[in-house]
Length: 451
Image (cartoon, rainbow, N blue to C red; front, side):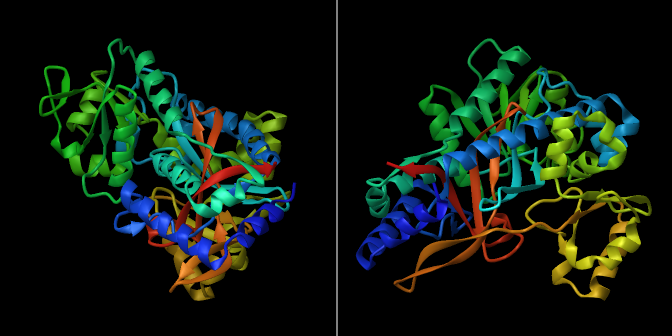
């Protein structure tokens, strides 16, 4: 099945009347359901992302050996401090990493961020969001909103449209980790993050879902908890399971390394998902660890093939000799020479902050950025530029339907650290493609095939 056929069919259904009706319905659904990132509507287009069954199967299959490789480097890093140095951890992170979470998963809930050129089956993973993968609940509720649109009703006469929901998988991971940790009674869940974050509306969606499944749950700011007599509390609410959405770095900066949450997790008084160990794979250096020739002996043939095919060439920025492809290179001179094919990223940041795209930077600006990366206390990575795919998406602008190409990423959700279930898609006219950076649109991903 040609994906373009399905997209063209959908767009052809958008007559002036149907487009206007669908746009009004979408706006109403976002208002009713709280589908906003801060004050910005989460979705600004009238079409969801489509994948064929073959494309979704390919995505899931190709990720499997990469997940095994990520698990290998994470477990070796925990056991081997010398190897762990490649991840560029801060001293305070070194103190947190050994804390036993009470279950045997370093990354129970994660998301891999990729660019998938479906026409070429070219799939490149540029980041591993192994700490606080957002948008699972947003994605599920956007599924429901799109199903109600008039244009989708017309489209479903011709195509089978399958959603990829994920909230249930989030819940099962949380409960399984809690049971392995030793929980016997029903957990009392705290969705842990700052009250002022723009994703607060997604926490509300999770609250509704967890409570519909008979689970006690509250949204709790880490600054408002206490830890006394072996119990982590928010007022009268005794927390036994943390769904951690707060970034570890921010938690330590604001509450301290001996704050109530850290103490409770260290004492095994509360189960926290994801654990502190997730910080290693969250570091952008984890992709450098995978792709560096010095670590190749760790991986089997299938894992090496997947790394070569799907992980862009990535290195820690430092004075060193390494390889590019099969050729030996001197890294810093190589970076200066091939600026337009490279991107600089800080090892520990999010939302597109601190990223320098070589092809959008002049020579002097790039050289300055490289020098700053070399001198920074926290490492930077340099990564090979990848092809960013584009697809046409329709919007109503000033009452008129407009269809134009937007860049898009592919961000599959990973559960238990070993399989894909569902996929986030973000659209943008900016190569950073990050909603939290202030632009773009989130859309749900559906698997479609002709009836």
